[in-house]
Image (cartoon, rainbow, N blue to C red; front, side, top):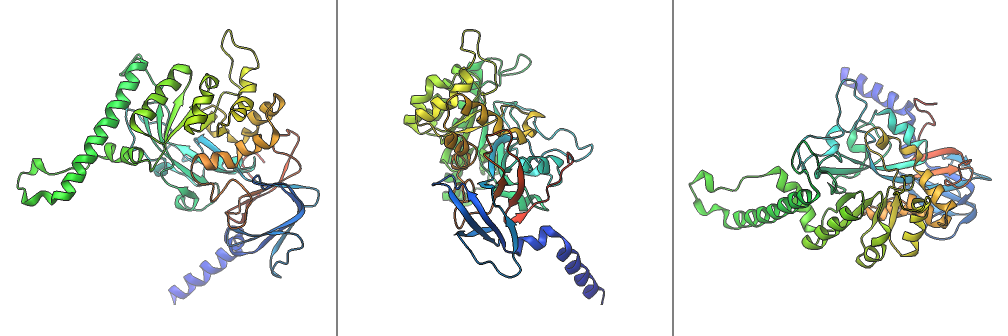
Length: 415
């Protein structure tokens, strides 16, 4: 009897919760201007959503009788924006301390998923700014920091949010410190090379141990033992996880490119300055860029508008790039302002279509999830935002946000 009562109560509660009822309910966005990003705008068109996916794009679509209808007349439907290098989701537990950086110069095994809090109030704030997918990192302070995780910003449990558990390994080429090793840039390079070479040796030893199956060895010291630090670097060496290098000038960019070439890594450069001198090399090598310096202060002898022009030059040179706000810690949670660097770049020569791509499909491509998010296509995850105008126009406002095919409440701690 008690079991039956429990099941009945659960059914009632979940049925009354929009987060559950909308996931299976059809949604029809009707009569809007669809901006698919991949392809031309579609005027006065509909999008039919079911089971979290976009199932049909066209005109005069017929939904089921129980479908939720969103009238987008006079409005624009864009894919949700994708923000990289964030701290969204790793704060919010009262008294839990700082989960955004770990001490130690090499902690590649650190996984931000272990700190993800689906109730982090920053999640609601971020998605109401039109950002529906984020990459949260475990830290940036050390030469080798840890893993990163890609998440859609809606879900009851941490695993409900995740779309890619090991998105990238984070290296910081400028992480020198006067109080600990490494204290110089050559020391940073040496440390990273040492760890990657050690991981290579570990991989050979692991393969040999597995092949031999120890052949009845009795000596305990001769047995292969798991090293979590090395295990975390193996996917990077195999090309299964990209190596994301944080750089802050021309020297650290050069050092990152050296390591990428030396170890044959699938590299990503996150740059805050000095990137233009390497634009042609990056284009030739197909190394993508996360451009984080739009609002940074130029160097002493650099033009005042150099950083505003940088995105336009990267696009002209054929570099695949995405925008980043350039902060960490508290700034890494302020992702709602992601369109700002794109808006400034458009004002200084970047084509608006390229700016929208750098907020949506480009970051999805860089992280290998463009088959799921970043554009409006049939079969893709329904992460959509209904705007009054373009996201890079500061007067544009948001009317509806849909994540994983669910309409999320237009509420946060700031509303």
